[in-house]
Amino acid sequence: MRRGWRTKRSSLGVWVLATSVVAGQGLAAQADTTRHAQVLVRAGRLVATRTGTVLANQAILIEGDRIKEVGPADAVAGHASRDVRVIDLKNATVLPGLIDCHTHITADPGDYYRQLFRLSPIDEAVRAHIYAKRTLDAGFTTVRNVGAGEFIDVALRNAINDGAVPGPRMLVSTMPLSATGGHGDVNGMSPYLHFEGFSGIANGVDQIRERIRFEVKYGADLIKVLASAGVLSEEESVGAPQYSQEELNAIVEEAAMWGRKVAAHAHGAEAIKRAVRAGVASIEHGSLIDDEGIRLMKERGTYLVADIYNDDYILAE
Image (tube, rainbow, N blue to C red):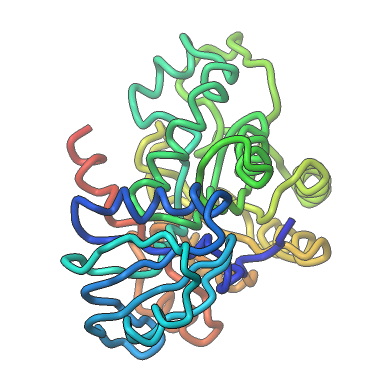
């Protein structure tokens, strides 16, 4: 299994997405390559991401599960076999598969409390492959799944890799690390209410290190930490830090020892700066970042995954 955030650029996993109603044809080509030695995709326009240009009258030659050649249509077609299957997208724009760095595709974005009290992890696991296929059909061929319970994301990733279900290439974090009473804990309930199952709750350096080792043991590709409160939970302040600098330092150090990067959910300015100082690879959300936080991120090369397309949904809720 690939570790880190690298992708195999030559694989069919970064195949074509057509920006028209014929997109389904391009996606279907992946499944058909086992029956056809070669597939030729004729593209009216092709987005060349390495040069930042849009090229006209191009073609993509696929052999088996690999993209063999991309270039001017006539030249590429001349290198195809006689029995090549042709997909004609001359009226469409074709581009490489998209990458989403912040997903939770194992979960339904519906009523949180219904999912918590009326559904089980088994329900989530049974439905997860549906969301994976929807994500793939939307043109996303790689996702970073930053939070799921009960190792459901690991099971889904493995099923996709084994070819059992269709879906994007997945890099998964399993359960996010959270302080007791933090964004990853169940708040606002009776202290007598308990939930069975695995948890990312960890307090103090020793617990944090043990929790990371546990998650890596069972399949985590990266580590997710909830460094601040959240928008959709019941803490008092969305921006409040929830881990100390010492704890965040330990998270990054332990993850690095196991060859893993850390993604930090952080809304508030102080939580963002603590996470960046600790050496996280990315800040998720970063809603209330200040000038110092921006400077620190630029100095250290920390990525900002703003996740802004969620805003409409959150505001509507």
